Image 1 (tube, one colour):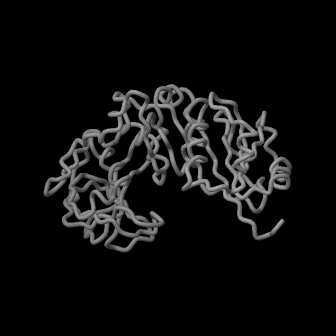
Image 2 (cartoon, helix red, strand yellow):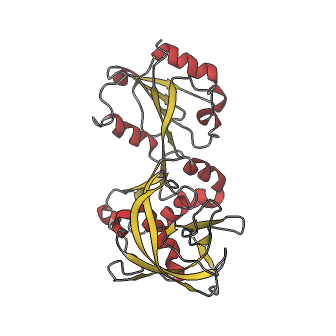
Image 3 (cartoon, one colour):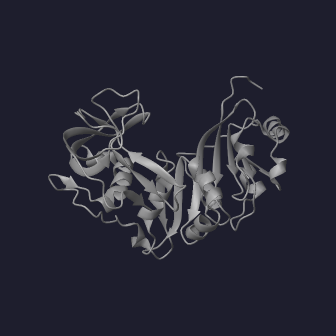
Length: 316
């Protein structure tokens, strides 16, 4: 086998019946994703959607089934590579297994994990989130794409987005409507006027605004916002740059994280870390090394000394 082989690996995570198999089948029927490349499909659980070995072999797709977490060894991966010499690998993972066997160094040298996709069932998410949060977070933390399936008009999509973005800001999030709920994916109304000359963000709405501007920086490009925030200046920042933000709590005191956005052109005379300010700034979508690409960057218009809110945390 050529030492120059590069085999992209796509990992699909999520609990049973969350929509992994359907998403994989749709991907394999999408000419933009699959165009006959020799593909190895590793199945780690049996869902409602079945894969026919003979049918897929005719399409240059070969299936290996794994019965237990312990079977995912370095030897197993090497054997699969030698047997199939795939050009692409897709792994439908068992949501109840730890991710170490697919996120470590056991895969062949030519294999490279390029994308992690998590599927979530909107009807069971709260149950898993409340009772198996560590397992849910383990999956979502490493995901490049998270898809919430079976959404209805009652699905709280903003709540779900905030739950994911709090610990994985780079993840893309998609929504799929349940059958019979074609209007479930209509744009959700924001609790502030995005078309105002100055978009004023109330304390209770900071989390919603933060998630929206991180998800949709183009929507805010050139707009002016005003909100109360803490001062935080990382040690490597210039004197005119800092990261205004708020602390957010998802469920308990052990689950608190800082949510801030880069701000430039700032005059912080007499202000120090953890001081409260009222910031008015323009939003620009531009490159920042912290984003490893383009994202929302604030440019200060005015900074005034502020007061600590009665309740200074953002809740989810």
